[in-house]
Image (tube, rainbow, N blue to C red; front, side):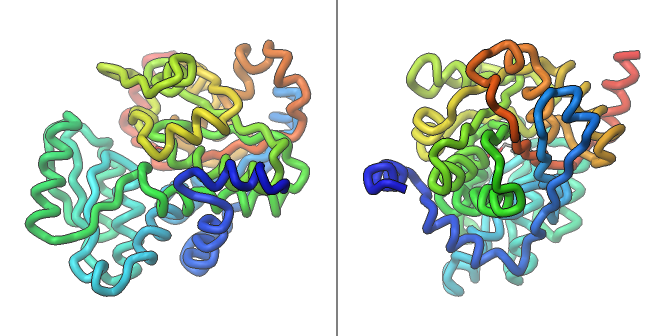
Amino acid sequence: MEANAEASINKYAANISSIKEAQGRIGSYVHKTPVFSSETLNSISGRNLYFKCECLQKGGAFKFRGACNAVFSLTDDQAAKGVVTHSSGNHASALSLAAKLRGIPAHIVIPKNAPKCKVENVMRYGGQVIWSEATMQSREEVAAKVLRDTGGVLIHPYNDSRIISGQGTISLELLEQIPQIDTIIVPLSGGGLISGVALAAKSINPAIRVLAAEPKGADDAARSKKAGNIVTLPQTKTIADGLRASLGSLTWPVVRDLVDDIIVVEDKEIIEAMKLCYQILKVVVEPSGAIGLAAVLSNTFRNNPTWNDCNNVGIVLSGGNVDLDVLWEFLNKQV
Ligand SMILES: Cc1ncc(COP(=O)(O)O)c(C=O)c1O
């Protein structure tokens, strides 16, 4: 990479060095997830699709990479009092599992409306659950009290350099597994995942396109890109329960500068993509995890001539923690 391209990538919260360090730090704990492909899905989409199966990651989502990097970056003194977070989803269980591996407590503030299967995962991995109300204000207040009471270290789900670096290890693996990839499509919520993926991928090959996929009912990042500043929504409504957060101060600059476009899809497109993952790829994905496939199949993507030459497309299937009760209810409503 040219010197000035490298300098410009170094102004963000993570860079190729921190991502490679993360890979070294977490390598013995995380799964090197497989990449699946399907002739059927290639012919439906008209491209070569490569599915990076983070739904098969430990804990059922890519979140374990960032959580593991954060937990194993702590000194023994810092780690002694444990880690704290507030999360309704995959970060909570990932952090619980990483803390368990390090042998330290994880104090997890969970809003009362969190999906049942994700709460069960936290408990399974030994996380100590502290309930809050559903609002962000209540989550933050309860977390602040837990931090005061325990003296633990806060590990934010996405607005944290250690988390972003851990998530970036996906690109290192994917581009080693499938070097011909020219485009990567990534689900976007708070932006930790796409920031890591984009920083690593564009350092390795600046020509790679990095596209985000976002649900219509939580399209704050697409609106932010249009507005040129972070936009937050008063409320969100989507089946993709992992994609309802807003961008953070560390993730927004990466999304603004390095994400080539944001493809917004409807919930019904997400459900269709989920069905294809189950029926054709035979992998269990949650709605947030299937949105990349929904994006590549959407008319927005297909009809945009800019993306005509995206021939070898990596799609991050980011998670597989499905709340089956919610899924059945949703599918039954459809038939
Ligand atoms: C399955 C899944 N995919 C994608 C995301 C989005 O990750 P980020 O908040 O880093 O953008 C999340 C976040 O919780 C998730 O659980």
